[in-house]
Length: 269
Image 1 (cartoon, rainbow, N blue to C red):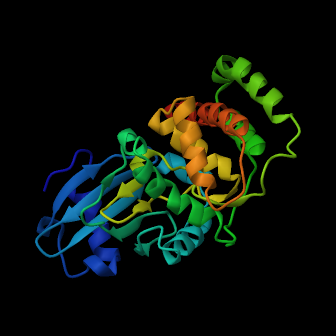
Image 2 (image 1 turned 180 degrees about the vertical axis):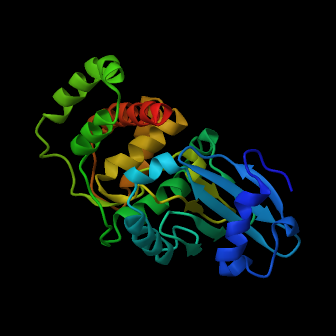
């Protein structure tokens, strides 16, 4: 068994508490570390079983509603957008079957029009499903909340960008669509592509939000330029209402600031 940052003792509780692992021992599995900022993620696998075990980092749990996550992820699974979580606890630890023959999405996957349609389809389905997710702070409230997590010296460093963001968010919002069920963290590591579809994993930040939120994060994560983000928005709007490039552009900047505040707060915690 081999995994950076994980010891045999840390795994023993999982085999004692998780029914799906009850007849096994840690030594029965190969263990591989997977990427993650707010969680430590591990693949446990052998010839007959293949699981993803997620262990939340302690400093992130105060900022995540695990009840909302469980509710929203269950709805997403019913929509065929998320793998089924077979076990979870109140602290946010989860066990999920590994998605066979899947890989993370790459920026290059957004260059081809057919592939682009496959990528935006699950977001279209999620945003247009009519379900009600738990949670729903608007972007202004969320950004202010994350700014307040910063130390005073950090707030000083972010002050100019925050003032610019406040001016943007003070503009009339008559062109903004209603909040819809949203993943709110579709970074490339949370998007798994197989032969048939794109899966969304890690629903801990999911809530009701503007559809621009998911699209802007995807554009930022893939490093899309203005022409590429226009193509993504056009593909997303097929079969739905028109949306504005200018609002998507604003959301990209605001969510970049939100991410930078969050990462700075994590470093200090």
